[in-house]
Amino acid sequence: MNKLLLTALFVLGAFVLNAQTTPASTDITKVLKFTNDNYDMGKIVTGKQTEFTVDVENISNAPVTLDNVMVGCGCTTPRYTKGQVLAPGAHASVVLGFNGSASGAFSKVATLFFSGNLTKQVSFHGEGVPQ
Image 1: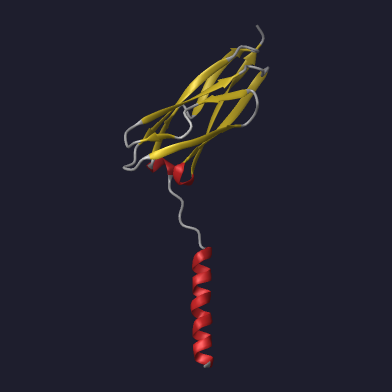
Image 2: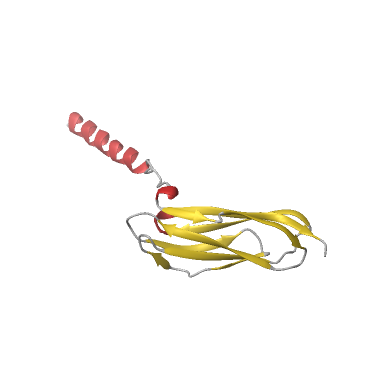
């Protein structure tokens, strides 16, 4: 009886330990290719609104969904199609608008969320100059 109880506890412990291990995360660079993911706006007139486009290409063999885009501050506005499914080889565009409120050097970020727990942080930087 003690051997049976000990064996059952051992098996249960093995299941608990296995459940706590996390699977290796997917390398996003093997699934998606990004263009303009670290964009240099250069010098812009302070207060002048501007925008740029991040291109996302699905380079995998399975569809991927663009779930959400979160920006780092209220000065950045994203435009994208929420829930857009990218078939293999398909592209999606995320337009990031900036209100130009910075005077001097600035650096901003946005995070793109995809199906399969894939995330990508994109950034842009530049310098706000007086008119």
